[in-house]
Image (tube, helix red, strand yellow):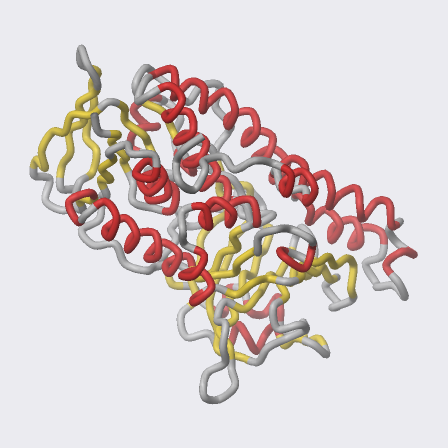
Length: 423
């Protein structure tokens, strides 16, 4: 019987490919009429890249993604705080990729259509309702643009991979309300510019109130020797400030945030130049949701941002959705398309992601920047005058442990789902 997947994002598409890998039929239902490569850059961490490689996607990732080799933290003055190798350079058996989110989604989408067939993904299908039957579950869909009925589909189980505004989560938790805003606003864009530092470095500069993140997402320079640089500017406002509702595609106004970064010109990076030269920047409040005590209700369960939306700290949103998909596939392989499989998946993934959501609310590994700002707001000669080496290492290692990508542990861990789908 078919596994019904609501949502054609990274989590939903990874799940469809993974189920196909073990010989289980899946069908993806997407609300929008056309899946297009929207969004900006993301990082996919080694534990999630490993799973995409097990799906046979390494060559495609290498064509479009940058193998991130370093993560570096800096103060608001551009002074170094902490840096560490990433991916292969850090000793992992798998790389870390910086890539355009829309391109990653397109890679997954192309693979789904190639392997499962074009009928495996239905667009203009927004989930309206669902109900269990004697032998499975029925899901009713509408075309959200017209309000017309889009049909009813029967399957073994229903997986909610429909994002932070999940229609299924809303039905399971009708009183939950809107996502929670913590007072931070993100402005995001992609600018054609010069390479910086190693050319494959992801940087974070600033502190809790004002922060800037950037990294390259194009592998090769254009004819002018420039690269596509993804950047994120962040500002903490009063949580009571009435900002606009979260929206990943709202056009940003430079005058609302550029002045805060005008003097962030470092000898290795021109932050205001990146912002000013961006052709299209977007703005949205930073939101998440409180962790749930339960994801699975009979033949329905949550996955990805529908289950555990988290702040984009530590580059874990997409990575955790991929791990969800692979873990659920492993349990379906072990238990069949049953409630037992959904419950076993939740038993592993819900506690892990709950801890990560909470850690991200405490700034995750970015705590080092805030500690520097609190202890030395006027700058310093060397960072160890401000933070001990042990403090730096403890913060970095704690996050890797919680997020599940400590080098030795990950390298020694067997694959979640073997590449050929066998034991």
